[in-house]
Length: 138
Image (cartoon, rainbow, N blue to C red):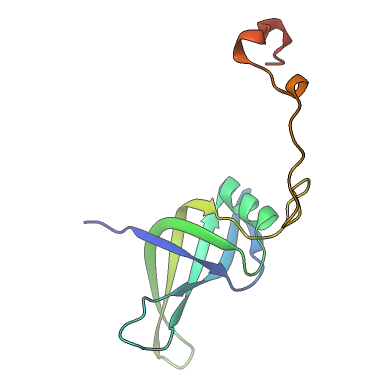
């Protein structure tokens, strides 16, 4: 049997972080576009995502609403009866790997659009043969 889900989409809201004992768990919804067929309108699926442990903390720290991410995980289906006796079901992807994708936001120290980066000078360039192993801090 195989249960692998790979999705690329955008967060629909800021991620929520909770603790399950000492373990972090993060929840968010991912908007994933379906492929268009013969002039159809764009369709989007909204998929609940659950991330655990250190990855959960990283998602909470670095991702915001609208950010694109790629996730790999497995599909989990939970069934229960509500208070009226109706059978209910929920679907979510429990993630094993998260990949942050470029957001388009300007990072600190990044050149402004249309502005040329500063030109390197010869003294800024270090050749591998010029390195002294005692100068490396690790």
